[in-house]
Length: 213
Image (cartoon, rainbow, N blue to C red; front, top):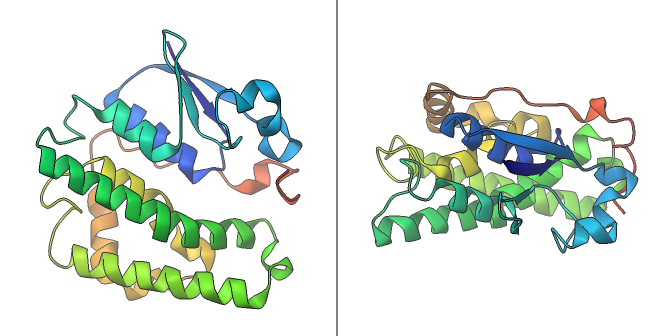
């Protein structure tokens, strides 16, 4: 059975949980206590060289890390990843956009805000992240003003990737309600079969106020 190495408050982990729920694929979970240093232990660094979550272990023992790589792999051969070469490249385009401009901005701001770390960050860094996050939201607003899903009329792992952090942008004190096309897209994602809506707060981990090792 597939093993998912996870940390429940992680929206990167949520991406994988959502796809697995929609695929109805069974798996087992191993929780990685990242704030207690478990991600930096040699045995986990052999699974993910950076020590982050998520990662997966396949039935044959092979391992794979990084959320968008995992999404792409698990979705292959399913309705959630196109078979056409160009559309697969567009999927990677938007998943790269997510990693560079959504996760890196909204994800960081949300994490700092919810764990009380934002006051410890340089003001210039916070403002830079906020400016970039707003630019990403504006790009998504333009896209979803034209199409129902990011690849057009088809829901895919690119939407799952983008959804994870953008739909909780309010947690990062970003004005999500100013983006009506994004809100309509969020509603369409939520309406998908076997949608998994549970988001775990950092407050379930008393160690999350620490800095990551």
